[in-house]
Length: 286
Image (cartoon, rainbow, N blue to C red; front, side, top):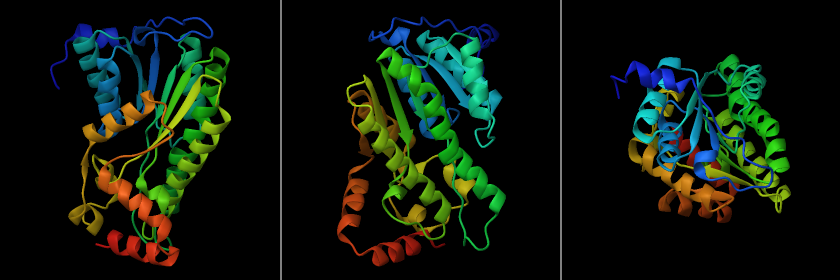
């Protein structure tokens, strides 16, 4: 990870990506992928998968040093072009600022990966409102905003892919993580709806629904000691990323990561809602 050469880091900020032609299906080396939350977890693993297949990358996250290190690794190993944008998407201004910066650089986004997000644990009557409003901004508003900004050109060019990272939380209410579960339910509903609207345009939308995944998410959400994490099946970020990447390339609309998670997601449909909520509450308790 460490020890990236100065020359590699310099190359990170000099990105030249061909625009391609309207209606064409460009090769990977002509395509640019924007990934939010790219510095760790699923976003980091997705960046490596895209780079391995020759896609040029725009990496977005809050941590500049970590992003530049990742970009330097990918340039050195795969010879792709990368651009680093340090933005906190819980800031309402961030999406417009990213879009304007890419317009000024004449960079076209062919694939958008809305991966950034965070959660929080506790009784809603006791949790911090400021943190929850930032969560809604990041998980819902910024995801919607970025999709709106980049989708128009995708439709115009008759090519594009969008991967929205949700959660198995989409399938039921989440006591003790009420706001987080609600934001992810939005992501599923929104993604399925626009996927239907975009049929025949050359643009596809995929929503990835992972269960508990090894990443920095648990620490930030303060859920490292809840039963779901301590006793449940926790998948590896790299495995989840591979599942999401495959689903995106196959133009699949909804992909639940992991066999056990698929079973749990399906079983919710046949279980009384009150019982589902009770079971989720027990799983979220410490």
